Structures are given as C-alpha cells and as structure tokens.
View 1 (cartoon, rainbow, N blue to C red):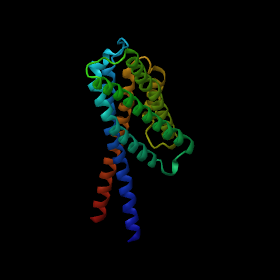
View 2: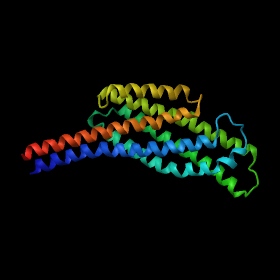
View 3: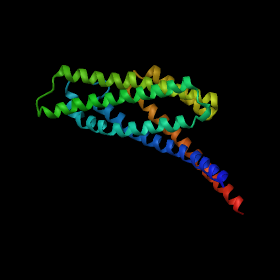
View 4: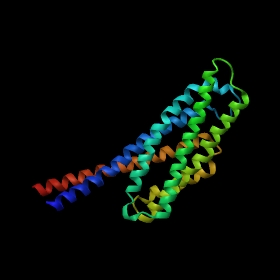
Length: 232
C-alpha cells in the first residue's frame, strides 16, 4: 500500500509541476506583454523628449504599474517550478545565473513601473500645472534605460543560462534550445535598436509554457491509458 501511495504521489507531482509552470508562464506572458505595450505606447519611439508625453501617457503608465506586480508574481512562480523541474540534474553554476538574472530582470521592471507611476502620479497631483521638463525628461530616459537596456539584457542572460541547462540535461527539445539562444542573442545585441524587440521575451515564455502544457496533457493521457489497462 505504501508503494502505491508513493507512486501516486510521484505521478501527481510530475503532472502538476509542468501544468503549474505552464499556467504561470502563460499568465506572465500575457500580463507582461500588455505592460510592455502600455509603456511603449506611452513613450513613443522617436518622440521628442520632454514633459508632453505625460499628458497623453499618464493613464497607460499607471495601468502598466498596476499590472506589473501580478506579472512579477507569475514570473516568480514560473521560475520556481522550472527550477524544480531540473531535479537531480540541476547545475549549481548555471542555476545560480538563471535565478539571479531572473530576479534582477524582475527588480528592474518593477523599478521601471515605479518610476513611470511616480511621474504619472506627479502629473495628476499638480492638477494642470505642467511637470518640469527636466524632471519628465529624466523620468523618460530612466524608464527607457531600465526597460530597454538593462532589464532586457538580464532577460537574455536568463534565457541563455536556461537554454544551457536544457542543452546539457536534454530536458527540452533541441529546437527550443536553438530558438532560445537566437532570441537571447537578438535581445543582447538589438534591444537598443527598437523598443518592440523586448516583446520577444514574453513571446518566448509563452512558447515554453505552451510546450510544457502540451507535455502535461500527453502525460495525463498516457497515465489514464495505463490506469485503464491495469483495471481491465
């Protein structure tokens, strides 16, 4: 009886971990993608630096700051269950880089949202009086630098370390490893060329999550077939 209970516990753990990672990843991809779009549209690429963007972009920046904490929670859950999936194959060096870069990425995006929300709140608080151009310009440059330069490169390091772990352990297919390396290289090299390149990261998380969710469904189907064969 104890053996049956232990086997069932392992089966349920193997099933729920990929599903949890997939659902958390899908939620993060959607929320973070929406947050990036809100930030990018409130700070149009090629727009003249100054305080005029606050009038048109304050609402979007405020909404982005409200969505970001929920995206961050989903990302932390995604990191946790992905790392748990390494099991005994975990490499301490690459896992440390994987975890550290993920947390740095998240911290920088939180800082980006906080700066944007502070500027938007200041613009509302002055009640019609224009926020100083120098203050608005500093906030605009800070938001762009944090999100487009620093955070996205930490996301690239996160992807590279995870792809290396997958390559060594063969926990994920080779095509996904190749796509991950290429996407990370694009984020490292070309993130300063266009603000929209940063959307590659949530799209990549969505692809990984869908793959995990598909695998979990296949595992569940095989488990049910096995149980039915044993009962018959």
